[in-house]
Image 1: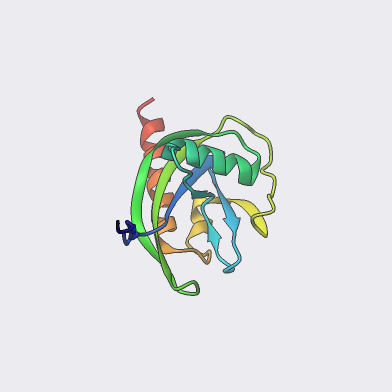
Image 2: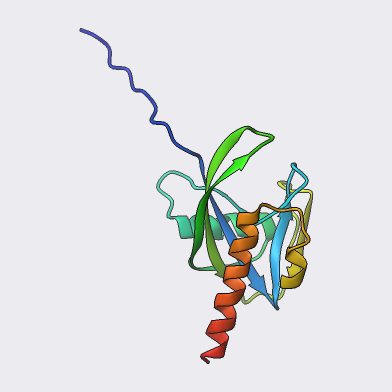
Length: 144
């Protein structure tokens, strides 16, 4: 009897990121590539994407969050790692007014005003997601 061999399907790793805006500032973390990025990470087997982003942001910042809606999705090519990652961004909120706490995963953590984001070293897809979430939040507040 022959043995069955499974061949891995080609694909991309998936990273679920969150755009957390509190007090008109977006939460960002600084990575080993000297870039600012959205907090988040890899989805675990059996985990829902919205649970993944809530877990990751809490692990990376100490803040409890609520996941709202998907903002965007795209494939990000990480040049230094020579790999592609499928990124999904979610809009997030938090009622906590505690300061974010830096985890061991990043070198810095910060909260930035919308007008500061354009000048940061950060992938354009993240900047697009941040701008979209700020727009959606403004529209939501305008209808109230």
